[in-house]
Image (cartoon, rainbow, N blue to C red; front, side, top):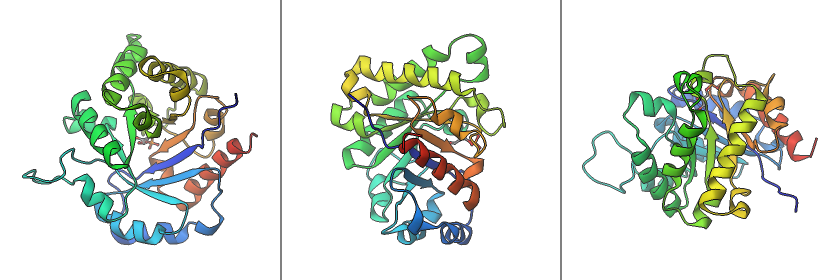
Length: 259
Ligand SMILES: O=C(CO)COP(=O)(O)O
């Protein structure tokens, strides 16, 4: 049986771009010529989401947030809920990014609460996992990602887990210009798929899209996409300019064509 998974190229803009700069970016993207065989997502700062979602309407670009609260509403100063995101047309949300884990107290437990809340409402979570340099040097990579993946998807139904996207982002490769080798990333991502299979079954695990993230650029994306288990990329720096973002999308399209 051949498995076809549509690759996902997702930009994570982090804390970059004003509303006007975000609008300019989307105006510069050739929306009508985006390839059909790639899922294209832009995860922008909250303030940019309403106008981006409106601009992207009817195009192949999906809009995502970079975080969310698990409660639908309440006394949670400074937080944003899933219904608020959905009301402005947001379809994706990054959950558990290593920057949130490192600087904002995100834990495996809060990641799981957020993932559960997202899938319940049809918001697609992009679940981030990955080891630090110290963990890698201590040969804990697999143990760490296994723990993070298991915790993140705990309690999800088969249908819910199939729709989730997982992003393997080794912390030491983020924003450093030192990407993982494609072979290493492919090996960890195959292991993540195996971890999903252990909790569900292989049929389900083979449907989950698993991205690589960490210093992905137009120059190196092809090597990652050559790995059979890698289904696209979660991209920071290189997603901030329309030209380089478009180059990443087109590279993934070639994977879809079987090249
Ligand atoms: O953190 C990342 C995406 O979520 C990766 O960032 P860079 O592509 O800038 O390394």
